[in-house]
Length: 237
Image (cartoon, rainbow, N blue to C red; front, top):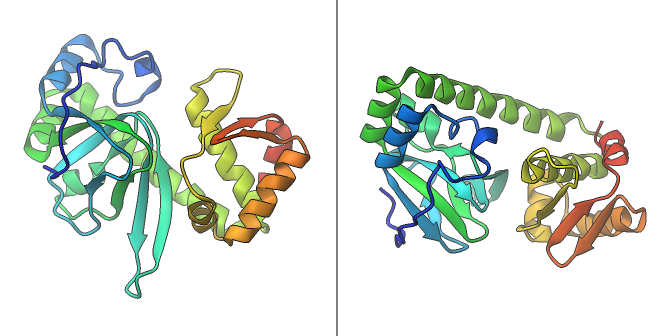
């Protein structure tokens, strides 16, 4: 298990309003009861590390609330942000199932509630519940597709504006959970956002100002509201 300080939380899957929208959290009553009986739910501050790249895979982490930054580091020390994981995402799943090491470093970028399940308990759980095994397979499939689309976005999008538009839309859709109003809290700095979309901090700052000026988005503090998803879609295409 990770060494971060633990604060137990009373939140359960049964009372979570997002449960029906999350692939792994939405289980039948028996499986859900078993799921809630294993692992530990903790409230973590911003900047807590769940696991490190190349660390032993000793458990999976389900994000209940908050956001988690996934990154990797090159031999020369350069850090690349790969993804911002959202509530409902299961981190470390592939490494735990395959018995390999964690491929990335996972760090909270805002206060988060995390359910940490040890490797043995998790493997026993999916072995005992066919529905959970199917959900795990679907989650791995979603990870593969997300990695493919992220690579395609970086490799094929001809402009930084297009890549930024795609990221903003992705986060807004994930945060809105199907609701008409699309908004989210921007937990990354401009430097980190530039790292994610393969650009420079100056370019990201300029593009966000342009998007705001063109009424594509509204920015209030760290909150970003998508005003024109259709125009952002065209930029991202």
